[in-house]
Length: 46
Image 1 (cartoon, rainbow, N blue to C red):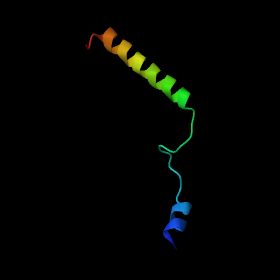
Image 2: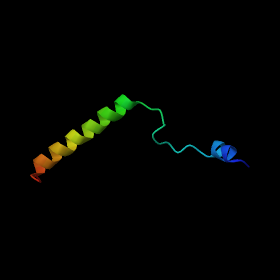
Image 3: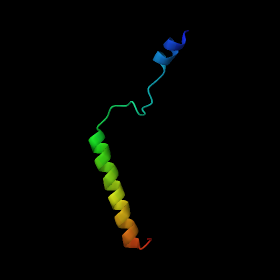
Image 4: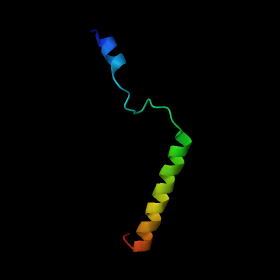
């Protein structure tokens, strides 16, 4: 089996080439940052 055939049969595991809703990921990421910041300030950890 050639190297090219071996790469074709491998399963996709995601990663940088995975196409997805990038806007949704950014919104959820920033929401998580804001929630963590509010939690830290409410608990007086900073």
